[in-house]
Image (cartoon, rainbow, N blue to C red; front, side):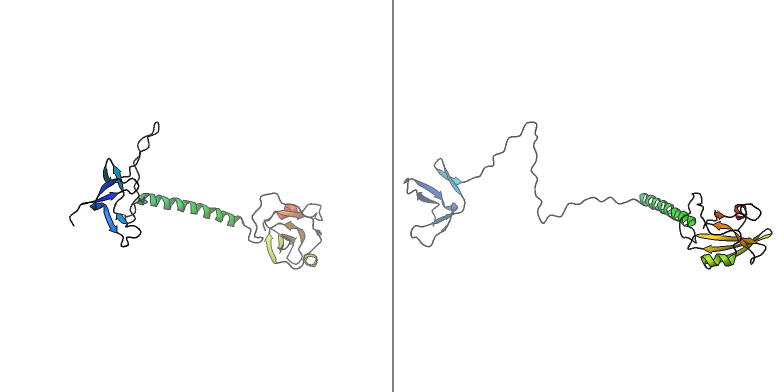
Length: 222
């Protein structure tokens, strides 16, 4: 076959046109009711000649004060991902950061140490700087160790010490948060002279047989 064109007739208008053979595809095997011939490209008839149809893109006019914007190309799936720069911390900045963290940690430890120092070992509460609150106790200068134990029970601690010519005896009652102080010529004959809070401050005193108050005696070393 050496022919290069095929004559095609429009059955409605009876007009004939020549179609280049290179645009023709497969022909249907069945001719009934009509023979179908495929095209390799979409064609258009223009000025008596059949040519491949070209789809033209109409560019929209630019808006006022707008500039040309290049089209963004979508990267191919197989292309490597773009490299993102990662800032690595320098050795100098690393040392400064470590020093700052060490200073902050030292400050926190110092605060904790101060809180521990201010914590009373017996009561387990923070030291209060307010004035001591006086309390009323059913005790007088005639009470001794026996009468005190009868009222409050056995103390958790019983400590004796001397200051000058007097013997002192301190009975610690943690459940009441006070210590009862006795004074006399010796431990066994000591009489009650007052009470101290967990921080050694006077919270109760009594009148002695000579008419003086025992508060001054509670300020002696203990």
